[in-house]
Length: 183
Image 1 (cartoon, rainbow, N blue to C red):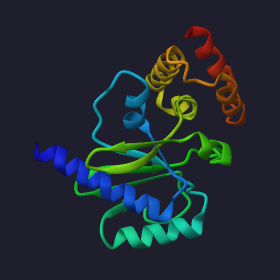
Image 2: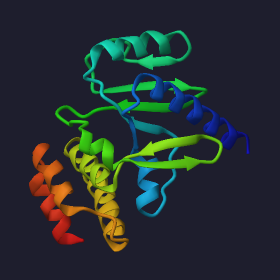
Image 3: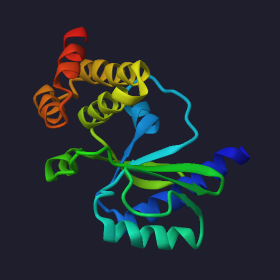
Image 4: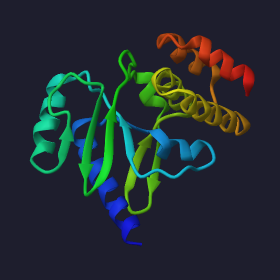
């Protein structure tokens, strides 16, 4: 019971912090995946934010450094790790991935008891992010993308046209086409 309270408290603090600096965020990673595919355990919280906005990023680093641990502690990286109440919170933006108006319009607003209102990435964007990360992290992320696609398609909750557009933009269309043909 203690760990659940601690996790939700850290999650709530992370969401407030992210919303303050990056209102155009989206929850990604395994936590988001659990809304679209069979659940997997996770203890970290991942957010997609516009880390290319160096002025805002510098403000975030300065603010966070006074309360929590953040690494790295300078601008110019595609991933940052904050530790909030002993819970790992990742801020990521893969190089070249664009947070567009269309991306923002496809986010899902959900409410998590004990945390509050939060924006969740669309299943299409989450699958693309997994495909992109699979180039470095391997087949496990391809399987996660496949699960998101498969279970979302069964619910008629997957826009293949948008998915392929984002795949082309991120130069992973060949992997995405293979996933679509396999689901």
